[in-house]
Image 1: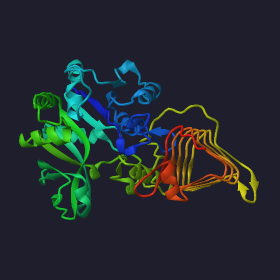
Image 2: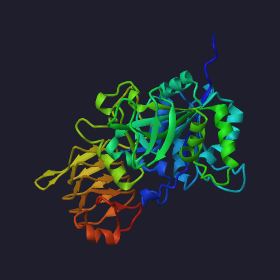
Image 3: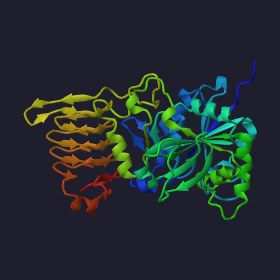
Image 4: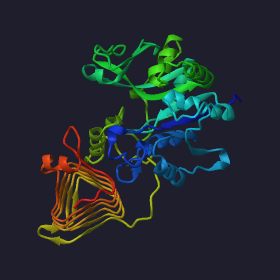
Length: 410
């Protein structure tokens, strides 16, 4: 019997996430809560584990404590079969410096390749919302004989200049990477669409080692996988594209096919959150065949109390997590995380409330993201007067008010 190819995964989880401030004030971007119970990193890890890739190094860096705690509590795989999810901080094996880019993160951890001796290496980002079966991408990579395969999502050609674009031939061979080009090339056979890079890669392990070491010697390089390694491998004729639209996930409804969100900004985070709460959600958390895993504290079920005129505990078109109490307040179009309390006569609309948020009696919260352990005082209003909100809080380009973790409102 032929030996099954040995594949390991490296998850890049070291970005600062400055555009998500203040949600990243005290935590790494992949540790930002999402969808009530989850963290952003849970989505990539769930995709890998569901596809039976269970040797995973999570490369961490900035403000990684809460991420490290989450990984240790949640992602303890059985060691009997050699499975693991382990955080790996910058080891400074190539000098006294942190990761200087995604390619440098790989270079500083080439000891993992030496220890594991894999045939192939999956390198995925840690802060995107999507479902994917990576095994299908790995199979295409192996069959093609490429040095690297890059996952890409089709985007309308008129908006493609906002993305890193892949120029590929009909056989999938990549001729060039273009960073936000003014005149993006179209996909083969689809003149109205272009290939946008998802930042997910499958490498031949030997070639990955070769190009990473060559890049490390280049003093002019930014040591970035997309910006530096990919042009190098394209020039070698070693790069192929993988069409994310062709990925088939068990239990996935057709409207969700091709769903992928880069939640790198406050507005993108908010929009992806709102995608979860429709009657037929664009991204469905209820797929039992391809679940999103996380750790759940044993909170009691959510509770809705009071049934009087103007004082009725209700939640419509919303996600309400365990441990939450809707105590005579009204919630619409919102995500309510564990241990949130919405008190009498309060109104919450089109908002994300993270763990431990308390909405005071008669308070109003609209189009807002409230981070953990914030108390909104009785009668206080957020999202009603944006000019007043800008004096106290962060307000996104699209008018989403964001209140940071533990913010004291007086």
